[in-house]
Image (cartoon, rainbow, N blue to C red; front, side, top):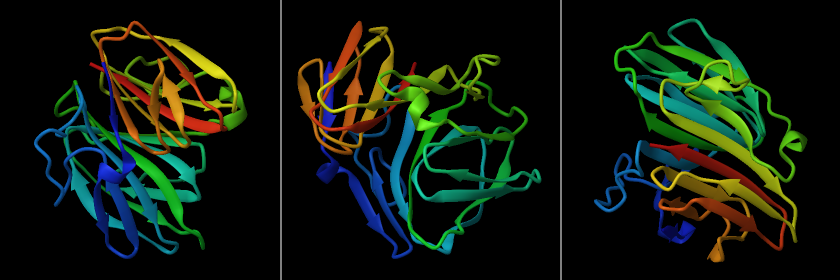
Length: 230
């Protein structure tokens, strides 16, 4: 099953400093048919104005992955962690038993990012944060693992049975990926693509399950972000 969730159908909230699109029910946006996808609970497509951001606020028992598309985000938390994550790179926060964090765009220009929440497999674990650079050229024509629940795989570690991956697709080419039909995959492309022949537009959500393999092709260059979860 490949289900397209058009960008125009996503939840929308414009707070001035934050222009957010919600793939799943979040805050004041509620759609009973979009409460999550497997263990994926939140996928927000955010644009954050320069010199603004999310002030300190708490979380617990959630794996929060931030994929920066353009600009940069600066993180700080109650554990003493602080770091700047730039375009194409990823940060993860395991909220665990509880953490207070802030995310600021300290740049002069807008920052765009995906914030993805995945239900934890380890409630009340010790909280943590991490970030890594992932040069886009390293994922030309193939998916690169960015974060997963498997320590030691060279990616960022989260406390969930999930894999977060990114790829860059050249126009006129294709990427093939094996899949487990029992898993829940969610893909967001930056430009129109076809997934096993099913057309998706730029920044549409693509909910996938029951597929043993994926062939992703497009006529334009596209950046792909994919989460594979239980």
